[in-house]
Length: 171
Image (cartoon, rainbow, N blue to C red; front, side, top):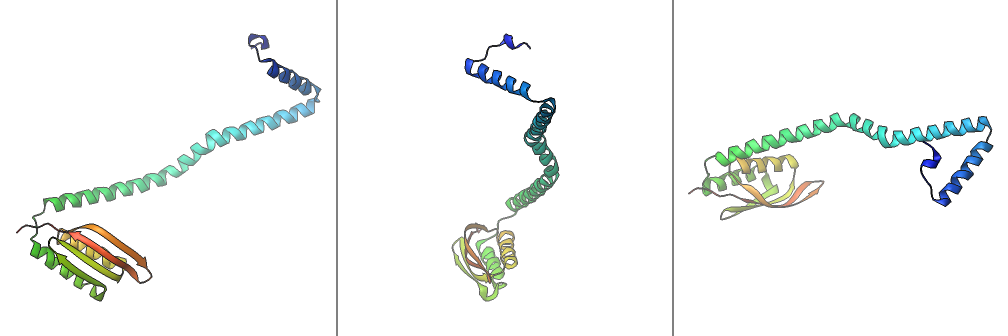
């Protein structure tokens, strides 16, 4: 393309002319060194902007796909469990209360339950995670209860706080 085919503003045209004069003043060896430096810098810029992010994505994609697949499987298990619980026959309030009391007894002196109508409040003091998980599973499975309010604090002794569950039942 000819330089006369497009016009630069006068200020840029002057800078361009100065750069040309300076380039011509360099010895051939210096021009070669500067050209190599420009190619090296240009290559680094292309690597940084185009190649390296794509390579990182390709490197990290399999692990991320595995994590997402595991999350999907867990969500599908929870959806199937939810569907099963929705289709299950309702549990009477007396049966739900008995199931919650039984589950709380397994916590020993670390758990206390207070039943009020179709709600129960579990007060915890230093319960380990596995025991709390077992209690919640039993409350969900046997009593068809669901947590409606949870206020827990974790310490070295375990979890302390309250869990309020709601259970609707048949007669």
